[in-house]
Length: 237
Image 1 (cartoon, rainbow, N blue to C red):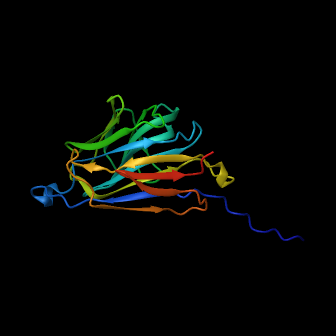
Image 2 (image 1 turned 90 degrees about the horizontal axis):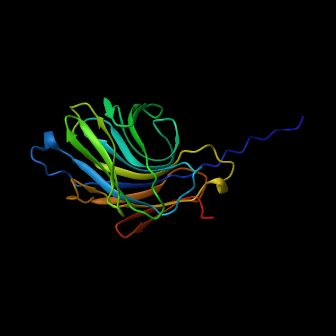
């Protein structure tokens, strides 16, 4: 009987990550008000990977005394109405409720997610901001930097004992599509994450560190650029 060898593992993309270290807050009564009230950054999708690609460009944060969340843009996201397409998204794990186009999510944890159709364009800059508005509510917005138009992604309420944003955050590119047959099938993604700011632009990060995650496709790259970092996955056509 012929020996059947082990099946070759499927190729997997390697995610890209830039972690930001924030200086400790100098807020009055730090034991009660520690952390930051807002994070914001500019995202420039330099290349559109295509309508059938599945990429997520996100800024993930933690909330002191609670869980974390993320804000970003997707290429082919699962919208609240069941349609698929470009969208802006804001999610928080273990949140209480949400306002706007929102849905519960599960899988990698549970929580609330606000998702709006958003027809971002390659080569344009988009400002993304998450901020507290009191009473446990956090709101997220996206701004077209060319026109100044602001779209509210939605608002999410967390338990009131949670406090402000912690002194760590991370920006990443994630491929969330179906398994690849070959690394060459991975659509090309290239974005620039601008250096984030806290407390309505008053505070800059104290430092950053970038790394590439596990994966067999050796097509991911990170480089520093003026006022930010460029993340690439896949190879240009």
